[in-house]
Amino acid sequence: MISPLAYVNPGAKIGENVTIHPFAYIDEDVEIGDNCIIYPYASIIHGTRMGKNNKVYQGAVIGADPQDFRWKGEATKCYIGDNNTIREQVIINRGIRPDGGTRIGNECFIMAGCHIGHDTHVVGPDVLGNGVTIAGDVMIEACTVLSSNSVVHEKSRIGEWVLVKGGCRIGGNVPPYIIVAHNPSTYYGVNSFIMRKKGFSDDLIEDAAKAYRHIYQTQTSVFNALKRIEADVEDNEVRRNILNFIRNNDLRIVGIKVKTEE
Image 1: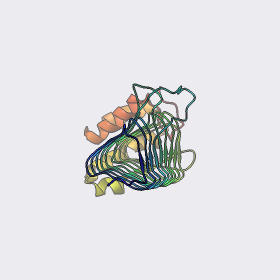
Image 2: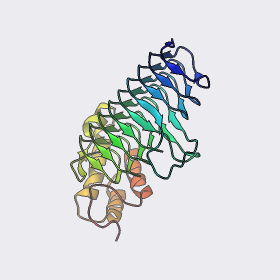
Image 3: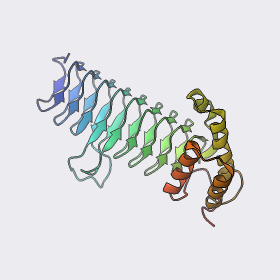
Image 4: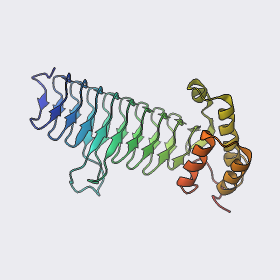
């Protein structure tokens, strides 16, 4: 159902069984997949590619022009996957580079008032609480929760199974399986409750806790902490994910002030 009171550009591609409510705005060069619902006063801007079964609530703007002085008007993209809920007044910017683009994966729940900057990748499934602000070129990996009013600065990376507490300010890389809180962001323990609820064994959770004790509680360098983890923690998926994340980000992680190498 497409309301006659909605604006749908003739150049937009609309899938099957899409509902577009009155006063919604669908720009040119937009693709909306099957079974999506676009509520009143939501705007889908040119360059947006949206998958199936998404709900976009009142006042949201998807594919907005990027807020970055490096963007000079090039045609860029915003990609939305499947089964996402995008609540009221959310703003998601397009990329600033024609070969890049902002990407929201599948099964994300993006609560009211969130802002997601250019070229950010929210892998999904993820939960972004009310008023979360994410700058450009950020990576949010799978199964992560950003609580209300948390702020993520440009080029930060947040690993999988992370819980960011409300109001926390992230200005770096958050390794997987942990809770971070406060300003500046501080290690607050392993995200054990969610890990256990989602099927991680007690042994894997304890291995994660042991690894992070080496990193955050021994006052050694991150370089040395990783060596200790390899010697002390059994090789498994959790250990590998922790080691790979930290090494792939040049040993630079949030919540630690000691030197990063010998």
